Length: 178
Picture 1 (cartoon, helix red, strand yellow):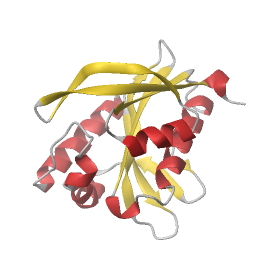
Picture 2 (cartoon, helix red, strand yellow; picture 1 turned 45 degrees about the vertical axis):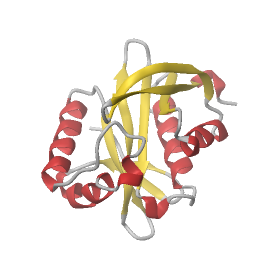
Picture 3 (spheres, rainbow, N blue to C red; picture 1 turned 90 degrees about the horizontal axis):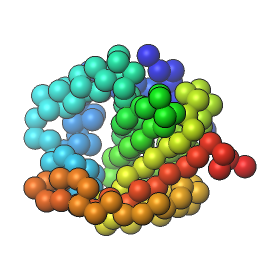
Picture 4 (tube, rainbow, N blue to C red; picture 1 turned 30 degrees about the vertical axis):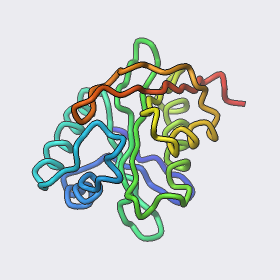
């Protein structure tokens, strides 16, 4: 079990099956899933399966997915988390997506900043990685704004929607914190 992460406007808490409808709505939006390695969902059962998978990985402490909750409204804005937790090497990979209605409001930066702080301070990680499709310019811009370092492009590193895509590798080290 991971503790909720609190930021100025958000609470990041583990996803539950109660989040199925809200997450299904987000994961069925083609604009949101454009740079994710899933096709837009067409049925609630797909979201239930995804949440169950996340919870199974969390129980084994291999990964965790959080619901992004706006404090003011209590509304679910998206999800984020640690896609891979490597305790031996003290590193983790982050992932995130927001409902398109909430783009451009700083929620992505606030979410990633919360994940970074929690990983370094509470999980004792040394390295945080983010792999982003090369064409996802908004995510690239956000990571660079948050002082993630570009390490290179992983050519055709992931099969997504029937084609191999390049992924840009970004990282942030505990020692990078000033």
